[in-house]
Image (tube, rainbow, N blue to C red; front, side, top):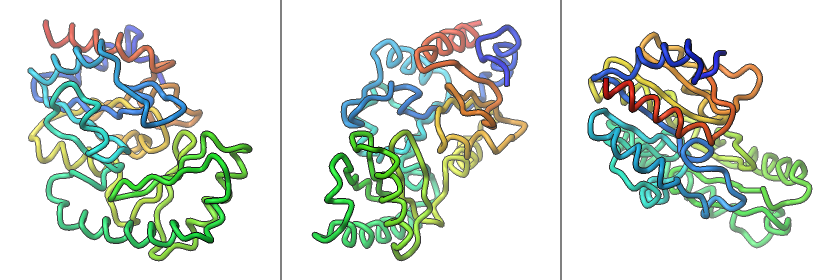
Length: 253
């Protein structure tokens, strides 16, 4: 895996940001720095300006684990596509299926909010209702490993059984039939009519995109784990602004 900002990395990126390209980004850990409380996260103004400029000439998509209602207020620009819940919300053509996912999540929430639920007695664990998926956050729990084991075990007893997606101190519970981020990107490529796509993400959920390995797609992982399937990498989230500057220069030529 080569550095995205190296000479060879930039040469590869140049091939994937042409006039009929889909430029897609995750939010948390990619556009927005990771913070202790997810609801405090924001996309820095300097990134907002660059992303707004990109939307004027390219098809831009945001593919996030957040619910659309949560993600939209974070954006100071209007991407053509805003996909939420790791792909379970907002993908064109999946509207009726999304209603089924919402019903499954409603059943899980009814169970998990019961007074006798063990996770409720564990300080630092919070449950987030995202309508089409739900999430246990445990960044504030101590020890975190024990908190994760607790919510993982509880999730395995839900009906229907959810797909578990691990993130940065978060366990996401997603309906098993729901599309993941890779499915979403593939659908957006077809729907948009774009010939190529360029995707930037940072965590386990983004590996579903990285693993596609489509000839028409190039991916960048931020501080990726060993064995990541990303094509290129950035060492940390702070380098995203440099990446966008380089992409903007390529488009302006």
